[in-house]
Length: 79
Image 1 (cartoon, rainbow, N blue to C red):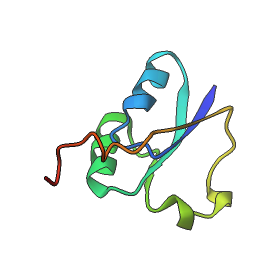
Image 2: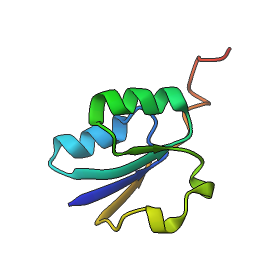
Image 3: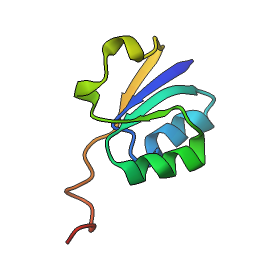
């Protein structure tokens, strides 16, 4: 099944889907460092940018849509 992933971060949720046979065809996050890490682990299927500014026509059709939740409340970064 083809998966589109919003708010992907480093790809933790995506990895679970990929490891069970799903095909991650498109992903998105607005943090450039998260996107760099995602690319190192999954390839170039991720797009850097604000999801509100990405034309819907650029998001491919999929069978499953997943999305990460904000990790800022749990993160120690930036303190």
